[in-house]
Length: 262
Picture 1 (cartoon, rainbow, N blue to C red):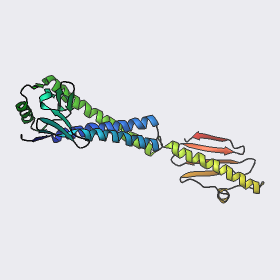
Picture 2 (picture 1 turned 30 degrees about the horizontal axis):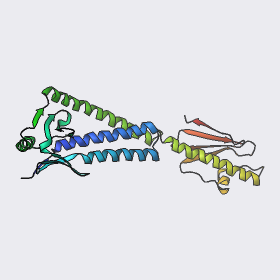
Picture 3 (picture 1 turned 180 degrees about the horizontal axis):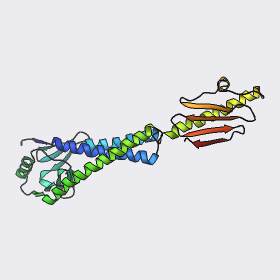
Picture 4 (picture 1 turned 180 degrees about the vertical axis):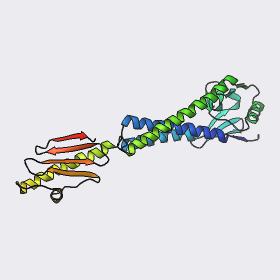
């Protein structure tokens, strides 16, 4: 018996890629909203989401092969799904995405795509099993499918717009501020510790930033540290990150306070 192959159309592949891209962007945006910070966990979860949807994408059949009364749905990933033509009861064509559903007695195999040379495929299957019923979706469903694509396009633009805005916020003072603020907070604690070491040697001295560094102060990149008052009893130091949104201050009693940048 002749072996025949029926590839999925390029337009269908484009449609499937678009759907999965939208889904990946949606989950990445969801990760951003839930965690409210671009950090290691956000990157890890985004990678997991993209990997999951990539698996689904490559699992989609890109070619249908009929060989020895077996319909083989060949995908780029995993072993092919095979069904026996003799067990096939009906084929339903149409709907959103132009799906083709191969109905079996106990299960159905759905291909969310348009098949090239669809009529030739169906005629060949009918030649193997004339009892198979081919059902076409009504024209109203097709019109709704076209409307659905328009609405989906609008949703795509909306989601991409939100995601682009989220990335813009992350590049300024948005959710990434928490990491920058942590650097400033760590620096002011370190500065206070080094100041106390200086005062142990010079109780009546006046500490400066250069003296703090001599006593082991290691300043983070882009963190600004200022000595407002350098005496032991009136000590006051401030720190802030250039990309953070908080200013930290510590006094002689080691009390740390902060305020929002104006």
